[in-house]
Length: 317
Image (cartoon, helix red, strand yellow):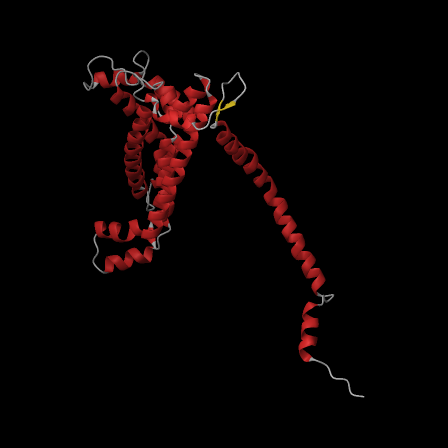
């Protein structure tokens, strides 16, 4: 009697069977997977606890009338419709947009200029890099208090120094005298505090460009402006996208410099959107209204950053 075997069936059975040699490999893979989950779990727990849970809570609060010392009651969508009728929100929105445009242009120009200045290694360039980055070691609130003392019309040395140089006549109230002087004080503070940090990011992008590309451009007769426009800027688009995103986001969320320096004055002319949120929550004790403004601001930030990164990536590609 002759027995025939099906080769296809044998191959299928062999593929589905677990050989003794493959069992340790599978155990090692499972062990690595569980080890990766164990490493990622603390970070995931922190993200859920300090980001997702507060985000959901803010969204839920925005749908309720929630006095700080009383139980919440559902009033959707009154908190969102009331934003358009709030005069302070409208003025704060306009001021925040104006401040964002001014600080983004000036901060990017100064940071890029500093990065180009210290790009190449030469005697003393390390000292300049350190000096430009040192203001980052000062906390933002501490830096705001420092500028408040320097610009004070009573004890600050700035007025005396400018008076001796003949640039001002008498004492000038830099933080509360006028809307322009208050805005200028905050802009100078932010430039001093963050120019070095953004310089460091842009310097990293500059040093990532291969020197051979610049050498080839010089051989082809390209000048400095042509090299900067045709080589440096296009190759730095990812870095520029990151820097601009950080600048715009930080400007739209501005709070410390205005709360400490100007208190939103004079006449609410330097009141930012985040200051409005703070006042709604902790001065008017209306957490629902503050949460609604926060949700709208978060949506604007997400949409703006997605559009900005999408445009820069498309140009880079």
